Length: 409
Image 1 (cartoon, rainbow, N blue to C red):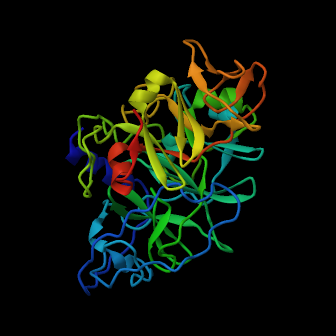
Image 2: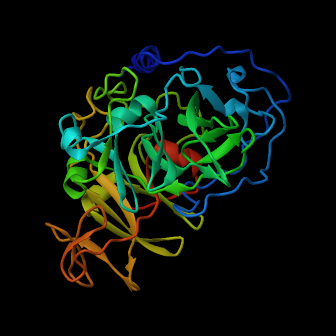
Image 3: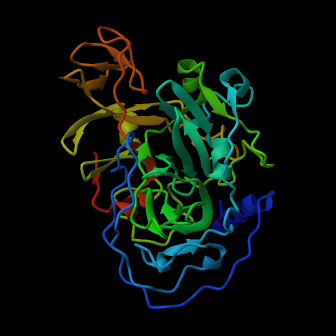
């Protein structure tokens, strides 16, 4: 797809019934200073106590981002240069978040979801939910509560990042909306309580009252609808009854993930050409070590045993999940598969996984496993591996925020 046509598609998202806002002129103060060292993605705990606000290393005052007058943000507090922030086209809330999500049964959703269609799986305790990308790509943020935990389920189509966060900072529960701004092509969110701006890829507040704070990540995996339907027949599915008129099921970014095309609206560090800019990678960060697992490698190995931050993990891959960003329809995309990461120590025993040509098995007991970290038969049948926070990225997006990453080969 031509970049100009893609921009028309993005503007179309705004025109299909979204709200409007008045843009005020930007203020001008001192020039920008260099960007501080990037922060690690996924370094916050996945569950448990929410992080508290921190005292950040703030940058000096500088010219505010375009359209800053739409916000009541305290722009004197910021941790990144404002000249790194670009308008994505839509204004504040031009891409409307879903604040009162409605859910339907698996049986109801099966009438409009195709077997290979991608959904985001979020499971906290017994509460298991699917967020179809055909809905998320038109809204980008769902403010929800899963297993009594306030959660924001987010998706940035330009970076292919589906990330779930705990919405708590200290004792405060935040609600998130879209700013209409991008940094390194990545979604910048804002919280409605303080209008601080948050980088979706890292979960870090980059401007406003909470600048320097970090949201905790919640494990979230993109899987095929058929997988969710089979494993979680009693799960709940985000409804297409959102209160907005959208052409759910259509992909307004058709052709975006073609590895031969440059990423749209990317203005950031030069992407290392070790991988194509829009190559898919599953990314893991533990104890300060960042690793990217290319889908091209995962699709051959099917199981990768590794150690990240001194923690033994396994990354599993399975065919059968469509790309949401390939064809004109979300369900019609080519098969890119599903990848997920888990701790591979179970009840004190370190397991080693391999694909035997038919099934994923651990070498220690011969038990069979699925891509969701469940032992489906054998001596360990019924056991579950603990998930590792792992995020799908396009290579350019991960490399921009974590240039120190190790690429698994």
